[in-house]
Length: 275
Ligand code: JA5
Image (cartoon, rainbow, N blue to C red; front, side, top):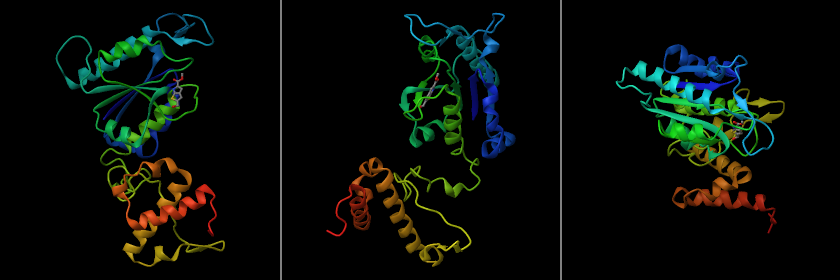
């Protein structure tokens, strides 16, 4: 997979050299290009922003450096793919634009994007990027405007780090333990934890500062352990993410699941547990 990131703060992406993604880059499983938008600004001050038409606070990113940046990054990828033709065109490239106005990024979208050949991330700053840049880019490649949650950031950079990590850990060989992806919270795929957050995890020592690990996890009874983990995931999801419980398909819930959930929901609603 090829990742290109366009930003006015290239140094923000130093973490991509670390940990799982850093190792995947070293192996050549992922190629990352981090590009300074100002290298496509041609005035002496390398200006990338201007005042908003129509008035209002703040500044807007000018379209010209963005247009040149997208053309250059697409053209370079075309060159690498040795595809024919003149004008830059997207050989499997998609543009991702982080914005609080976008579609909510999710595990499902991460899984879709993990199948892409080439992702280009456009990091806005100030009050955002001139809207014509996305209009222009839609003529070249698929474009997704994505939000990582309902809060305001000063720019798209931290959202891109989040999305890159969520996407790249799904690539074959990137996660050290291939078995740990399907059981994660939100259970990518259709494993037993699909649609739930994960319950608690424990390791040695068995007793620590007077706190004990649940006996079942030391029982060696794998059926009982799986059941306990599912119960714990259901209870925790009911407590902290009732929205996820509401979206579970009823076919995915056994009689035991329903019993665990109805008991958990007593606690959530604050109804009289003693009834
Ligand atoms: C701010 C110029 O989903 C949370 C997000 C906040 C935010 C994003 S994504 N992008 C920007 C931005 O500010 O580009």
